[in-house]
Length: 62
Image 1 (tube, rainbow, N blue to C red):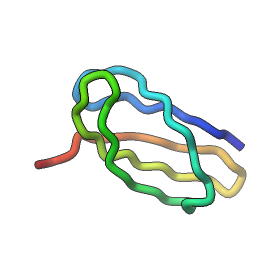
Image 2 (cartoon, helix red, strand yellow):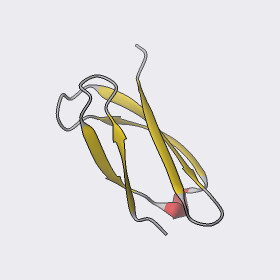
Image 3 (cartoon, rainbow, N blue to C red):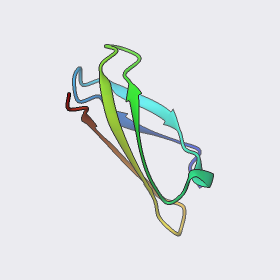
């Protein structure tokens, strides 16, 4: 089981490491500001039944 994962900020290209909360469900979606450039990203997390985590992000549309 992974307790953290990383995604690439859509705006600045930096790799961002975030904690994974499996208690929040197998499919998660939330908005998080990039700690480097402060632009919002919509972060998508999918936790497989075997515990593998897929994470990706897209820039938030305004």
